[in-house]
Amino acid sequence: METVISQSKRKMWVIINYVALVLLLVSFYTADRMGLTALTISGGVIAILAIIVSFIQVYARTGLWRFVHTKAEKLDEREMLVTYESLRHAYGLFAVICLLIFLLAELITKEFGGGYKLALMPVIVALIYLAHVLPASVIAWTEREIYRG
Amino acid sequence: MEARKIYNRIAVLRQERNISRKDLAEKVGVNFQTVGYLEREEYNPSLDLAFRISEYFGLPIDLIFSTEPLRPLSQELLERNRGKEE
Image (cartoon, rainbow over all chains, first blue to last red; front, top):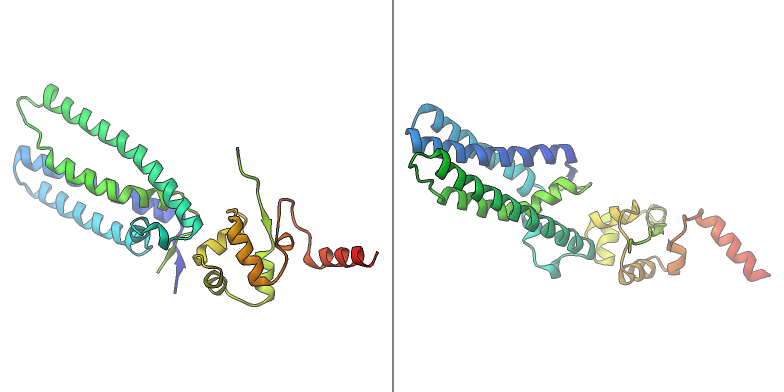
């Protein structure tokens, strides 16, 4: 039985997902700089759990994750239009986010790092995750009617 | 150029024939959510989809879709019949 998941709830889960992703990165870099502490470990664990739960709620149970990764021939004409628009918006957003992150990373390393070399791999992993979920996030954020299976 | 809003009678016809959104969606080859968008007039169908819907209901396409707000179907049919008689 499908039930509608409200737009406000979807927006809330999308925000939780991205905030948790940022929290995970902050926990990682804090641990990298200051060593493993109870705070960084708990921050990281909470972030991972929040990412998993919000991912299931907004991308998996609604079918949005599968939807944006489905071949065009399996979609109807409205779905193709929705997918196209979400990819277009996601592409633009992703470019801006990448630019901001790399500028920020450069700034942190050069100005405030004090010789600290920022490991880029966690950021790159986060960006790859972002590239995959952004189109689904755009749909979750903008579409009026999304059902949860 | 912004697309014009297309009004339709899909919701009325579907309820009249007592068929679910899912059944109609299956018959015309779209997702059931698309039927919801069509009924709320939030999505303009392609010509192909409009023809599929009109073929399914067995009605002329201009009786289901219009660029003007639609009047009740009974009123429309009455006027058409009067036009034929004259």
